[in-house]
Structure formats: C-alpha cells, structure tokens
Image (tube, rainbow, N blue to C red; front, side):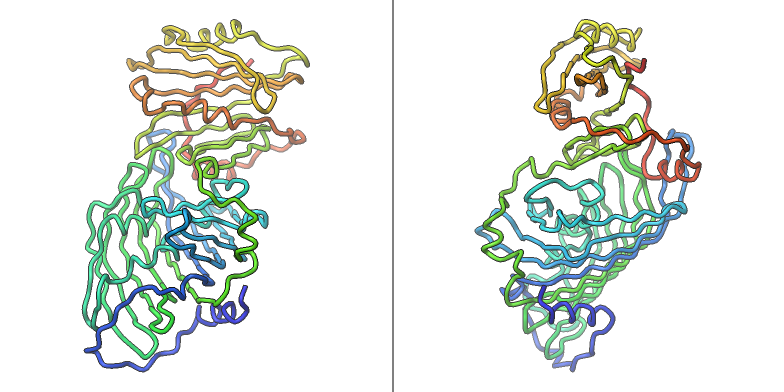
Length: 470
C-alpha cells in the first residue's frame, strides 16, 4: 500500500482541518474524476442495539448486541470496458461482536484478501477470484455506504451552497443494502465550499424491505468531496435501523456509525497491477458467488447459493432455509446419522421404505428415485415423495450420502408443492456441493446454557424433518 496514503488515512480519521470558505454564489460540479481509479479506503464501523428473535413463533426475545470493526483496502476501478467494477486488496478486515454476553470475532483470512467487485444492476456483488467466502466473511466486508457506491450521494448537476437535492428509491436501496425502498424523504445539501473541498450534509428517512420484511432507516451523514482530486474523501453516516424478523434472519433495532475515508494514489499496489491481475481469473460467474459452509463437528461441508441461510447448527444437524424475494421457498435439514459397517450400503428400495415409514400418514406417492456416485466419490440415493401435511400439499426430497467406511448423512428438503417451480433444481445444486470432512475428536463437556442462548439469538430454530436416525 502507498505509505503516504496510509498515513493520511490514519490522520484524517480523527481530524479534518477547516478550509477557507469561498464565495457562496459559486456553482460547482461534484463528479468523480479519473483520479479515483486507484485509491486507499478505510472503513470504521460501530453498531449498538438489540437483536430480536422468535424461535418458536410464540414469544419474542430480545438480546443486547454491540459491534466494532475496521476494513482497510486498496481499490482499483476497472472501467466500463471491464465486466468487473473493481478489484480490492484488503490489508485489514475484522469485526468484534458481543451478542448476549458472548464474544465473537470475524476476520478475513490471508488467502481471501484479493476480492473482485461486480455491480450487477447497480448492486454490489463481492466474490473471490479463487475460492469462496463463508457467509460471515461476506457479511464482514459487504457494508452499507460502500466506496464503490458513494457517488450516489452526489448531485446530478452543478449546485451552489445552500442548494439541496433528493434521491431515487432504487439508488438508496443499493447504497444501504436493501432489496427495495418504497419511499424516502432523504435530502442532501451543499453546506460549504472551500478552496479544496465541497462539504455536504444529508438527512432523512427510508422505508424499505429486505428478506421480505420491513426495515426503516433514519440517516444523518456528512460527505466531503475533494475538488482537486475529484473524489469523495470522507463519509460519516449515523444510521438508526429497525428491522422486523425475517424467515431466515433475526430482527434488530440498532444505531450504527460508519466512517469511510478514501485517498487516491497514482499507481495501484503490486497485487492490483496489470501483471498480477493477469495471473488470476477475474471473470464473474455463478460458481464464484457460492458460499462455503463447514460443520466441523458434524463432519461435512457445502457450497451454497447465496439465497440459502443456515438457521441452526448442532453437533449432528444443520438447518437451512431458502428465501427468495422475501418468500420462504424451502427448508433443508442436513443430519449425520448412524454408521453402517465398512463396506455396507443401504439399497435404494430400502431407502424408499425408510422414507415412507418416516412420513407415515403424510405420505402420498413417490415421484422418482435414483442413485449415483458423486464427483467426491460418495454414493448418493435420491427420492422425491409427495403428500399432505396439515392440509397442505407438500413435496419432500430425500438424499442419503454414504462412503465405503460406513459414514452416512441424510439431506431432507421440504417445500409446498405449489413452490416446486420456484425451487426448480434447488436440491440438486445444494447436494452437488456436499462433501464429507474429517470428524473431530469426541467432546466430553456439554455446551453451557449461555452459549446455547447465543446460538438461539443468531438463528431461529426450525422444525425437525430429518429421518433415518437409527
């Protein structure tokens, strides 16, 4: 990283020297220029509030939370002729969260510090040229008021001191990581022009949605635009957010402060040079957007599409939900089940019998059944069953994975029959990313009640649907 730029970031974070004001009648055009192509960015985050869960649907529970974090990275913009918006090289990325008295730190591993950024329909998508993020790693670096999107703050034409402008709903949704914004009264104003800076203030509220639930934001922000380098060099935003509980995530009511500093540099760091970038495949594709999930205790791993969210996790089972555009499409339970003797395998016919037995009176008929060997060398049985549960037509898709040592895992997808078209090949894509991992040494101590509470806060427990637990 450019040393002078790094030093400037640390100094600027706590101090901005007041400039000399110029004539208020002067009009300025605030448009990001080519100097912003290579820059050093630092983001500092502070969040405090409460998290809300309703795990069994009968009682709302609230838990205190607090988070602090820092991101520091070099960013190179790639221009309109590139399929990517930018490439980043992270020097620092961490967040410390305290949730219901439990401490948790998330960091970005050294192997995942070269990050590609794509703007798909105006929305930021971050991914690795090689490898995959975990959900926690992605959430760590995918923050509101991204340096790639802060140009949204700027007016579309020339403005004078005292003049104000408003914002389109869609652009605010991009900036604040929402699925949609239904209305807003956000307004920005140019409050001062100095010889080197244009200073803006922004305030207002946003009514939006994410994951199918309402989220309301109240925002106050200050933005400094450097007139000489034509770059946004400082953003400080105070955000009050109140979000309802979603199908796949807790609700919360928090106060967040985000401070972003950006300094242009003449040349990119070595990792972002033409020579180094030519050595990696930056081409965006759906495979690179998959998320890595590992259950070390249960001994399995997955590559998941980003619409899947892990809801709960124990030493033997992980529960996931698929939510698209706010609709709960399906639930999936992955369970480690009892081993067979080495070399033994369950037949497809026996597996169908177990499935029918587990569904009991809910069973209607089998739609299909198949078996194969996966790319990881595991034996896979797959059965689809239709039936009725609580008066609703339901489709169940059962998988049984096994290896030559006798280890076995069941994967069960549950969805309403009417959602089968939306679900499409969701089970096959999910199962294609399944693999067995080495099992840990057996533990002799039980988890404390406090740690179990913390797990409940992070996820809403889902109903049990796994089978084959003998």
